[in-house]
Amino acid sequence: MTAPRPAALGGPLHGVRIVELAGIGPGPFAAMVLADLGADVVRIDRVAEVRPERFGTPHPDLLNRGRRSLAVDLKTAAGREVVRDLVRDADVLVEGFRPGVTERLGLGPEDCLAMNPRLVYGRMTGWGQDGPNAPYAGHDIDYLALTGVLHGIGRAGEPPVPPMNLVGDFGGGGMLLALGVVCALFDIRGGGTGQVVDAAMVDGVALLSTMIHSLRGMGMWQDARGVNMFDGGAPFYGTYECADGKYLAVGAVEPQFYAELVRRTGFPLPPDEALDRTDPANWPALRQAWARLFRTRSRDDWAGLLEHTDACVVPVLDWREAPRHPHLAARGVFVAHAGAEQPAPAPRFSRTPGAIRRPPPHPGEHTDELLAELGLDADRIRRLRGDGVVA
Image (cartoon, rainbow, N blue to C red):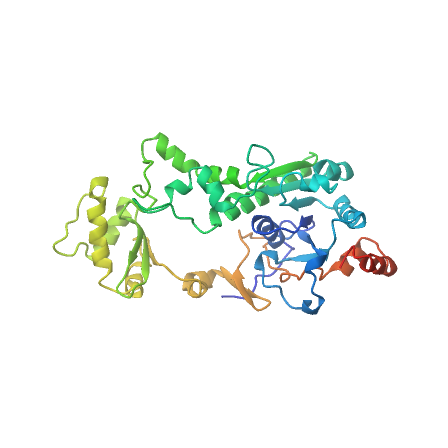
């Protein structure tokens, strides 16, 4: 673990102002990525969530790092006008409500683009802005299920296994929203006008599965679960329990890497045979043989023998171990900021590196500061507070 990397020139998105209507999961993740890369992100939180006694201490939700918070009651006309004032001078608005919610608030794309024709309006939903499922709730597991992705994750003969919520919420959702926002900003810098970025997790999950569709089309992927190259079916791509109950991850896909693995481990143990690995019919027996071998030594013993080779084997680390692995520590993959250990900004830029510029704020922690930046005087801010419009 290292100290945060320097902000240098402020990151590649320095000078970009983003208004984020507070949500959970993928929307905040996209805003976090953009803030890490230098954008000035203003998060609009709910007045009911304001706890002034906590100001000055970092909020534990790391997804909210890097921005300032303004607490507004969007149910009031005056509160919505505060947000409109922010939008008029913003480059991007990000929201993650169900379709139609911001329209009913008078903060939909048509409303905001009428005020600011160069605005990028980023929308994060599960099902998208249209289609039969669009009005309904869903979660990561649902988007994986309908796209076929969930069907392919798990052991043969066992139920599908949800891969936490990394694929839908963050890979197919928040990350693609961030990419879409940056692409739309690039278009504006080239002379274009504002537009809506409809980032649906169901779209993003399907996109992430493109290679599997290619392999199916080439006859290199079976529809059955857990019998393929990258789904745990291949004995040279999977995890193995060691003598101490911990695990190794083996990814010796290419023949030369598998040969290195065989040479260094002395595979197989008698009376097992070194069967032809290119024949899937041999995979179950080979997996059993490798399992017997790996159970003869501890995880760290195997890692010491294999990690710094082309055998493509590393230890399966837990959440506490990972930040202290020598490679991750050397690269500063995890950093300490405001007392919290967390993943560092990515990707890396040689001239304008990203950085964690501030800890996650508590709702409303920067209300006065941001309203003053809008040009409101102290009396006006006091009246808005007194009316419960802001907090």
